[in-house]
Image (cartoon, rainbow, N blue to C red; front, side):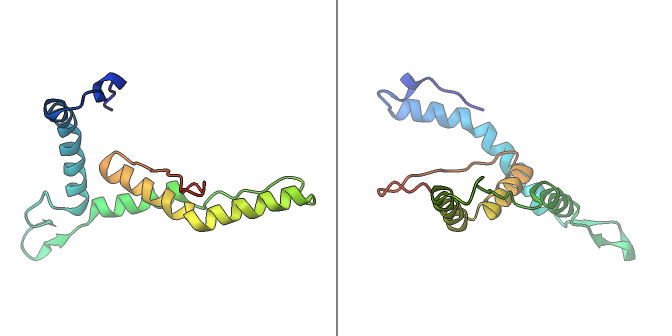
Length: 134
């Protein structure tokens, strides 16, 4: 992880951007190598064995799929306690809307996939002009 002081971004210029890129380059290279390994791009043929016994073994793909399925599993459920009250029902409706709109189960699965294949995952949270968080 790269941590920078807030003062680093004051008076931002070409030299500072070059310094930041130099700091980040090893991380990008490592993640690119991890992803190439997942895609089986490191091996020129992607084939194991010799002669008639040549077999394409997508071992990395298999492992990633298994771990991703194991870690993501069933998405979390959110229930508001005391749902008999009007406020609780309205609150539950808002939670359900946010979950449908943002598809948190798919997002979580993608985050797991990114972390396994690249050893890093990022989630951007933004707020629209009307105050809605995406």
